[in-house]
Image 1 (cartoon, one colour):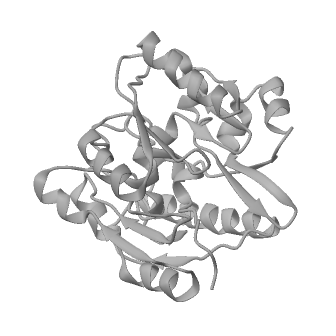
Image 2: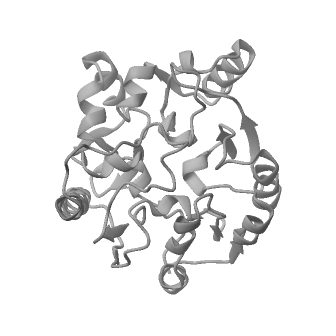
Length: 295
């Protein structure tokens, strides 16, 4: 996780991120201070659950979205680390070698794959924002967008040994979902999905089939709940079992029945990140998961 010191909604990403907003009459320093406090609280809450959190500080004034590191790198159970091409020019500055060096020092890293050069071809694949990866079934799910190129997805899947399933999803105004991980989440036992946001019945049925064939329950959420980040959650392993980290905003929008279904297999951990959510991402986006074996 990357601690932000100069957080603000990114003007270079607002055109295609409908989850992003700028609150009126909010002082920039107050916004940055609030995000800093929210981040520290999030780390504290995760560590209370026995989750090992690596924290890096970002003091740059040129990387307003640095709090979302899952977009520029990912890790994989076979020891591979992948670095990604980013759509917004100022987000490319988020990539940092000290993070990769920490992973190589403390975990079993077999290979670092760098796709950043695809930016020269205007091809982008923004990590586990663009992709929702089912590590158990070895399948990558993706909604194509400016930040999620299907051709580059095929390159990724071929090199890392995944299968892929691309489908289309859009909000109530017909605007495509910019990142797959604000639309859906996959845990060991269930998947959070807003099927009504998938206009193609064929794609919708195929997605349902893939989830049910994997043995997962489908927890149906609405487009309105997705807009409140209900799909932007992540299953983590703590000292007392599995938890589902999500924002307080997302938690509040879930119904008692939805919460009850989730709590059959995970403990829900709501974290208040209202300021950070102004940038169009939430708790899942703040966490770059580590799937590597420790040394």
